Image 1 (cartoon, rainbow, N blue to C red):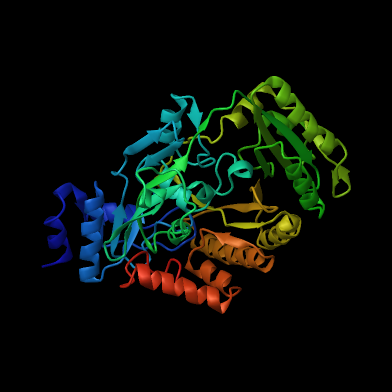
Image 2 (image 1 turned 120 degrees about the horizontal axis):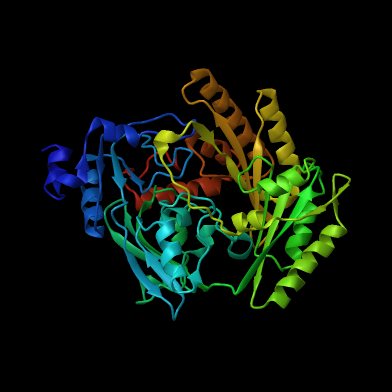
Length: 464
C-alpha cells in the first residue's frame, strides 16, 4: 500500500492533495530561499488526524513540514526534504477564553485577526504579532519567538506562552505547562520548563495543536511619543535606548529608518534629515498618568544626543498617530503577489545596534543595495531585535544570487557581533552553531533524537 492509499483510509478525500499546482504553492515564499516542492499536502481537522498522519509518516519514513498560513518568511514553511506538508489551517477553534483567569487557548489555524476581534468585543487585548497579515496564525507566531505589539512589556512572543499541546515525532500527545496536570492553562511555572522543547524549534520536535497565552484588560488611554535621530549609527544610540528603557514608562520602544512602512508620511515630510524614527508607546488609567509618562520621555530626549546631534521631539499629525496606534496592521497577504522580499533578523544587545547597522549598511552598499532597518526593544536585559529589509527581483536569477550572498554576509555580521539569528534557515543556523559550545550542540541533538526518533519532523531545520 502506498502512502497516499494509506492516508485515504484515515482522512477524507478533501484532506489529501497531490495536485501539482497545489504542491507548487507550498514550495516557496517571497525570500531568496530555494524552492522545494512537497510530495503531497494533508489538511487535518482534529488532533487525532495529526496523530494518525504522524504515525503513518513514521511507518513510511516520510518527512513532515507543518504549515499554517505560510506567511512566515525566510523558508520556514518550505519542505526542505519534500515529503508531507501538513497544513493546519483547518484546525481553527478558539478553544477557551477564560476571562476570570485571563488566558486564551487556540488551535493553529486561529488567525491573528480572529484573536484581535474576539478579545476587542470583550474589552480585552493581547500582544498580537506586529505588522503581520490578517490570516497569520497566532499559535505559529507565539512559537517562533518574534515581536508582538508591545515587546518592551511582554518580551518576545514566546515569553507569553502559558502552555501547549503537541504531537511528538512518534505520534504521542503531550501537554506542557499547567495544562499538563491541571484543567487550567494559566501558567508554565512552577513546573519543569517543557514549553521550550517546542518554542524556537520550528516544528522539528513536534506539531503544536493548541496553545495558551495571557489576555489583558484594554488600557483606558494610550499615546505615542515620536523622536527623530539624525545620525542613527552613532555609538551612543544604545545608551539612549537603554536610558529610555530604564525610565520604565513605555510599553513599546521601536525604531525605524524612513523607508519602513510604520513611519508616518507627515512626520517624514516635516524633517528630511531624520535617519531613524523612534516611537515610544505609553498607556494608563488616566490622562494625567499618560501626560506624566510622556513628559518623562520628552525630558530625557531633550537632554540626549546621538552622533553629536540632538534628539528631536517630532510632532505627529492626527493621521500619523492614528496609523501608528492601529498597529499591528492586518494587511491582506497573497504569496502570488510577492516580488522578492527578505528580512534577516537577529536578537542583539542595544550596545551593538549602531555598530552592527553600520557594518550591514556597508555590506549592502558594496552590492548596490540600500537597506532599511527596524529595531525593537524587548523586556529584560538591554537587548532587542534588529531586522534588515531587502527587496529584489525573484524573476532575475542574477539578482537572487546577489541577495543570497548579501544575506549571508548580513547573518555573519549579526553573529560576529554576538547576535542570535531569528528564523534562521539551515545555512544560517550552521553559522550560528559555529559559535555554540559543544555541550549546547550535543544537548540539542539529544532533544531532537528523543522527541523525533526517526527524524521526520521538519528535518534539517534545526539539526543539520
